[in-house]
Length: 104
Image (cartoon, rainbow, N blue to C red; front, side, top):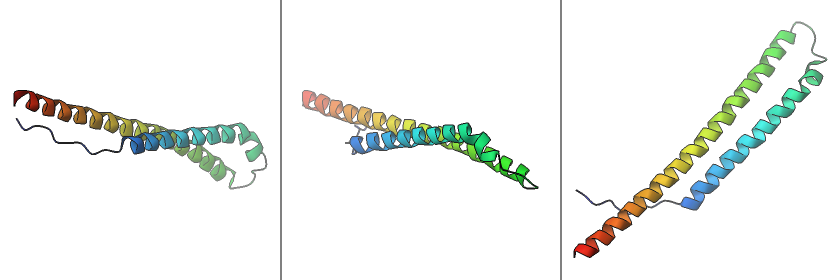
């Protein structure tokens, strides 16, 4: 069996990236909340033949925003999972080195 190799991974950068993804998701979620609260005021003066189009686009914006929030949260989870995998791989490498030294 081939011993694992050393792992090069920037743990701090991964943690920062995940934190920024989550912060962006939170900000977007807040903006969507404001949009939803302001919907009656925003749509109050929408009249005429484009009213249906405007209503639809507002719903598309809200749905798309919710989708994006979920994707940002999922990506943060993926980044952190890769961070933990890299750390586990590095620990496995270090353990294999210790075992080799113990045998030699």
